[in-house]
Structure formats: C-alpha cells, structure tokens
Amino acid sequence: MMELRRFTMSNPTAAFSIVAHEAWGHKISDGENDDDTNQDDGQNASQRSRHRLRRDFNTLPEKILLAIFAYLPHVELLRCARVCRLWRTLSQNSRLWKQVFLRPEYRGLHVRNLDQFLVLIGHRFSSALQYIELPMELITADVLHELANKCPNLKSLTLDFSTAMQLHDFNDLNAFPCNLKMLCICLSDVIFLEGFMRRIYTYLSSVEILQIIGTIEKSNEAEEEVYETINISKIKVQTPNLRVINLYGIFFVDDNHIDTIASGCIHLECFALNFCTRVKGASFTNLLQRCKKLQCLLLQNTSIEDRAMLAADWATCCVTEFDISSTELTENCLLDIFARMPKLTYLAVPHCDGFTDNVLGLLIEQGKLSNIRAIDLSNTVNLSLDVVSTFLKRHGRQLRGIAYAGNAKVTEQFWTNTIKNIKNIKIFVMGTAFGWFKKISTRIHIDQILDACAQECQKLERLEIQWDEETLRWNENSSKFIDHIRIRCAKLHSLVLSDGEYYELVRSNFERADRPRVVRTMISEQTSIVSLLKYYNELRFN
Image 1: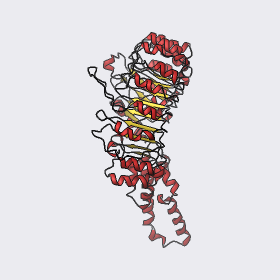
Image 2: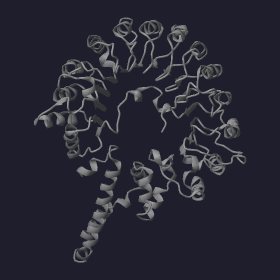
Image 3: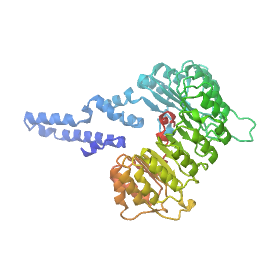
Image 4: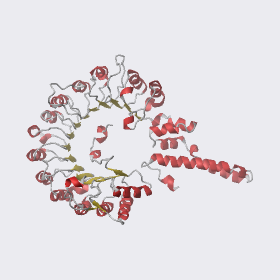
C-alpha cells in the first residue's frame, strides 16, 4: 500500500510498473491456490474470488485505467500495447493521443512508415488531437491533408524544417488545418519556404500565437545581402488576430520587420525577439504607439541602442514583463526608461552592465517593483550586495522567483540573512559557477544555506546552487541538512548542483527516499525564472 501511495507525477512510469507488477503477482498467487479452493466450503471460495477481482489490475474500470495510462509517455504506451488485448485497446484510445510529439531529437516518437502514419491520423488521433509536432520528413501534402480532414480540433501545429536540405513537393497541397490557434515554424538556414507558405496563407486567419524559430546564426557583416528564408510581412497580413509573437534567433529580422508587424497587430500582448541580433530598437516608437495591449517585451541578446530606447514612449505603454539580458544599454538610458515605465511584474537583467545600484535604487524608491513576482539579477557586476539586500527586505515576500548568481562576493552569510525575506519563493538560483575563474577567496558553508531554505522556503520547487565543489564546504553531518530540505520542501522537484562529490552525496540521499529525478547536475540542467512569465506556455517550443 505504501508503494501505491507513491503513485505521483514525479515518477509516473516507475509507479505504473509497480501497480502492474503487483497486479500480475496477485494474479499468479491466486492461481497457485486454486487447488486449495476445492477443499474449502463455498463461502470461502466466494470470498477469495471477490478478493481476486479487487486486486486484479485489469478489472479496474476503464475510466480509471485510462487515467493511469495518461501518465505514461507515448513510448511507454506503445510498449504497453504488446502486453495483452485490453492494454492494446487502452493504449490506442484517442484520449491518450491529444498531444503528439514526433521529433526524436526532442524525445518524440520516430515514425518509420509514412503510410501507416497516415492511417493512424484518422484512426487513433482523429477528433481528439489538439497538438502535434511534425519533423521535416513528415511535412508532406498527404499528411497535412489528413490532419485537415480528420482532426478538426487541432489547435497547435509545429512544422520543423530545421534539418531540411530539400522540400517535398507541395503543388498538390490544397488543404491545411484551418482552426489553428498556435503555429510554430522552425526555419532552415538553406531552404526558402515561400513556395510552401503560399499554399497555406489563406488558412492562417485563426492563428493567435505565432512562433518562428531561427538558427541563432549571426549574420556576417561582410555579406552584401541577407536572405530571408521566410516572408514575415506576408504572414502578418494573413494573421490579423495575433496575440503572441515569438521570433527567436532569426538572423535577418531587423527593425523594418518589427515596423511591419506593429502596423497590423493591434491585439499583440507579448512580443519576444530573443537572439535577433539585428534589432536595434528604432521601431519601438511605432510598436508602443500601435500595440497598446503589449504587456510582455523580451529583448535578450539583441542590439538595442540607447537613442532608440529613449525615443520610445514608455510612459503610456502597458509593458510589465521586461527582459534586457545581455544588452548594452547604459545606466542613464535605464534610469530614463524605468522612470517612465509602469510597475513591473517580471524583470530580467543578467549580464547587463548598465543595471547599477542607482537603477535598482530608482526602481525601489518609485515603487516600480511593488508588484514584482520574478527577477533575474545574475552577473550584474555593478550591483552591490547592500542594494540587493534592501530590495529583498522590501519586496522579497511577493517574489516567486529570483536568480542572483555570478557575484563572487556573495557568501552563505548573505543568503542566511536574506532567505527569511523570500518565504514564498518557488524558483531560486544562487552561487557562482567556476569559482577558479571568479577568484572566490572564501569557502561556502552549504549546510547553512540548505537549512535556511528548509526553514523558510517550504514552497520551493526549483533550486540551483552554482558553486563548484572546490568552493563548497561540508562535513559528515551534512546528510542531516539534506534531509531537512528534502522533507520540509516537499514540492521540490529540481535541485541542480555542480558535478562532484557533494552532488553524489545529495543525489544518493534523494534516491534512498524514492525521489531519484530531483537532483541534477549543471552539465545537463539549467534553472531559469522564465517559467514565471505570464505567457510562458505560449512561448514554449522544442
């Protein structure tokens, strides 16, 4: 019974295996006792029969079985289909195939037979399908026809051309899903998509969320001409109801494209331009004037300039979520625009040298952070501990996420004194990676930090501690403090540490408590506050 109580979303596959194994074990056990049944009276036989039915997994109602199967990824469903007829029927239920991921490089299924896949669209997916990702080899006229004709409730579609060297023939394409709310197109750096796009423009009027994912390549300044592999202007004309636009890592996007988008997207609420390195901000004046509903503006790793940002009318805008990570805006520019902006709920300024004590002080004094829910101050070299401490004392309790890493002067003393001010935190990033590079002169007593988190931050869900093994200090009693955070922070599902002996110690502690997926290494995992964005679910891709 204790194993059954552990049937949680943290490890659904393992829990499912436990339930199935126990049910199969009970079935065998009951079968072995059939000979003894003949020697008992009718009443005992009846009792054993009822007991067998109660404990046989396959006798559970179909609704409950489907609810259990719903926890499994599709790879496991395909394996379950080989067990018996009942499991095969359950695994093929269309209600378990509402979202289908078919890109193996992103843990999706690999389709080997196109003809069989075409049959599955109508028989297994049909009207239940709401979301599907298609790799290049499956983006064909026949597949798109089947989705259009057999899947009327399809709302989200991802078309991944990123690995394409040559397109399929779309001359016969005369049908396309017409009720889409989200369309994501992953570009290729060698294929022009205009021929394909001309066939589908007329079907895009219902799209509200548009994502175009580039190759994150920086254009060569010596090039005489920059080639656009997709015509963003034409897409904008055909999608008048856009609320969310995510142009990620597209090397040819510049301010002219933003001007074009701003001229027709009056319903725009979220605009992400991360890693669009040609964007300088000259179009933001028109963007803010025309898109009055714009609340979220993400400009990470863009080339925005002071003059363009100062010219925009920030005083009348509605932007409350703002990301200027790794940009080169100066202190004077930030003082000016933040003084005019409304109150912020999300702010990301890592690797932004212009974000200084004066800027954060202005935000605090003018009450611009009174509604702040998430903030990233990592690697802000011109920000002192005193100002950060003042901010956390005043606004820490309303924070749900904070990242403050990369400052070599921060020790456990700073965090043990300030963690009490962030009791409602869910995402927490601290420390300094590669201490040898940052020249950290002191050792960090990790036990004190874990104990403070266990005492004060019991809503914690994700924690990343970036100090490396050479910087951390612990002893033989450290297991006690690891126990504290594991027990008291029951919602913690991700604890990221630098690889080494201490990581192994923490990982083994959680594994013994049947929580093997919680502790992770920085080599494979990175914690961010982006999940606290209001439009995070709409911006997700890959």
